[in-house]
Amino acid sequence: MRAVVFDRFGPPDVLRLAELPDPSAGPGQVRVRVHAAGVQPFDVAVRTGAMTWAKIAFPQQIGQEYAGTIDQVGEGVTGWAVGDEVLGSTMLDAVADYVVVPAENAVRKPPELDFPSAAALVAASQTASGALLELKVAAGETLLVHAAAGSVGTLAVQLARRTGATVVGTAGPANHDYLRSLGAVPVAYGDGLADRVRAVAPQGVDVALDAAGRGAVAASVELIADRDRIGTIVDDAAAAEFGTRVVRAGRSPQRLAEVVALAAAGKIVLPVRAYPLADVAAAHAAVESGHGRGKVVLT
Image 1: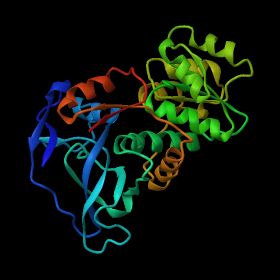
Image 2 (image 1 turned 180 degrees about the horizontal axis):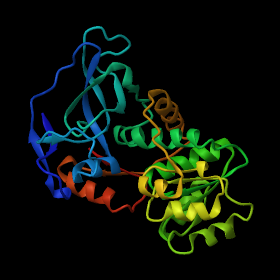
Image 3 (image 1 turned 135 degrees about the vertical axis):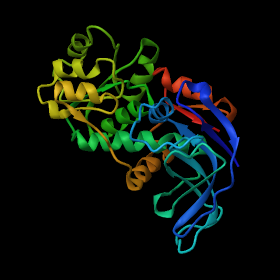
C-alpha cells in the first residue's frame, strides 16, 4: 500500500510516499480502505519532533484521522461488515491506503457526508465538544474562541451557539463575515485584543477557549477572573505561567457520532481544503501556517 512516512524530524518536505505491506485486521479489528485523512497541528508536532513522548520509529507513518470503507473484518467483530463506510481516530498511520483500527472505535459515516467532510470532523469535533464540556459552557454565558475560523474554532462556535451561549471569535479580517455566518461576533487578533473584546461584549466574558496560542491565554486572563474557565489546546507553557487549564478533550466515538449526526443534518458546517496525497507537504505547510479557514484533508 501507499503510505506517507518521514525518516527524520523536520519541515514538511521530510514527508514522502512509500510502499509498505498491506496490514491485516486481527481479532476485534477492522481494516479500512482510506479515502480521506485529516491533517491537524498534532501531526505537525509529531513531524517536527515536538511531541517528545511519541514513540517514533523511522521510517514513521503519520496521521490520526481517517474516513473510508471497511474491506476486512477481524475475528469476533460484530456490527460491522465489508462495505460499511466509517470514520474515526487512529494513531500515526491514517495517511495511507489502509488502516487497521479497533472495531469499537469506528463510527458509521452517514450517506449525507462525503469522505473528505467526514474525515475533517474526526479530531476537531471531539476536541471542540470535549473542550466545551470541560469548560462547562452554558446557556446565557459568553464564550471567547481564539482562532475561531480554524477547524476546532469553527465547530466550537457552532456547538456553543447550540447550547445558547453568546460567542466572540478572533480571526483575521478576511474571516469576519465567515464568523458572523456561524453566529459569532468577530474581533481581530493581535495587540489590544482584550479592549476589542470588551467593546463587543460589554456584558463581560465568562469562558475562553484558546486554539491559537500567540498570547491568547494572556489576553483571556485580562478578561476572565476564574482561570479555571480559561482553556488552551495549544499552549501548555502559557497555561502553566498563568495557572489556566490545559484542555486535553480525549477521544470519544460517542461525541464524534453526535457531531457527525449534526453535520449530516446540515446543522453545523466545516469547510474543507482538500489536497491530493502527493501534496502532503503542502497540506502540512498549510496547517503549520496557522492560517486558513476550516480543515485540511488529504484525498
